[in-house]
Length: 395
Picture: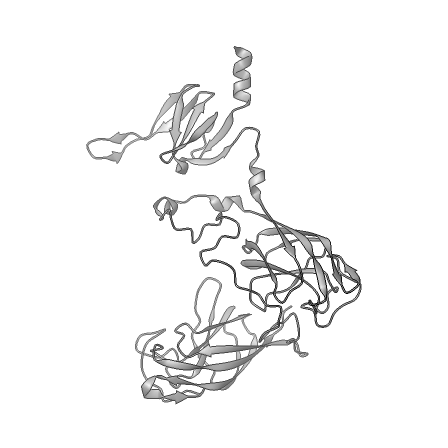
């Protein structure tokens, strides 16, 4: 009997409670919102008695539970559970495999990452371009028409997100990196032409999950159980917005990894600013305090019936409210004029500033640059401005 008891205890699951108590037992299952656990060793547990007259919690007491008893634990009381013979280390990684062949678009890996997550990508396989055999490491030559002209021709490359200012990562046959932003991982082969290529690379992506992000708070207990909008442990590749957008291999309006890099240490981007956008256009450009930025704008919008058609200089100033009470975002600027503002990483918004048809300004803060038309009612606006932005290159 002693031997059997020892074996039973040695093979038990371990349940760590938030109050600091450690239990040994067998997790029988989950029912009606609680874990059923049969203890293999006695334990002393905190009990919160309820005053039946007031239905309020009174002084916490303790109760000794014997081996063999079955107890029911709420998830909010549990820090973690370790199942005998298994390790939570296995839950630290999510792995996905995808085949990457040459085509007009980047290949969607189906893997979403968050800034700071560690990612490991390994690749094998062979493609053939005409009679040339190419592996994920690539060739000793470069291809000026490839997505990454300075990289080896045919090597495996990756990017996070669908924005063209996202840096391209050289993967080759394998690389480990830390994500510098949130987004979907896209993969492609670093070669300009794709019509003459056949075959594919087999790519394995493994990301390390921050298990501490699962720590529950008081707000979690009151949150809608169907709300997964901020759940870092959603199924791999799952998203409330559905499938990730297609990322074309074409450079588009701007691609700093390709042919839009300027020789004077700056980058250039063209952004369309719609007249009916209340929050303006996200330029995708992150600035630092003191950065020198030059914006040249063209085009016309119709800023409602009263102002009519206006250029980026704007029309006659009026009154209204967007950022402040009783005024346009920039009260001294004309109706419909092109203006800008900076949004910092913590969501703080800078004072909006006038841009017009051409302006060189110093960034007043660290953050993302947004462009907007100066109005208090965007619902009756039509048209757009085209803004050409020249800003520092920090790559």
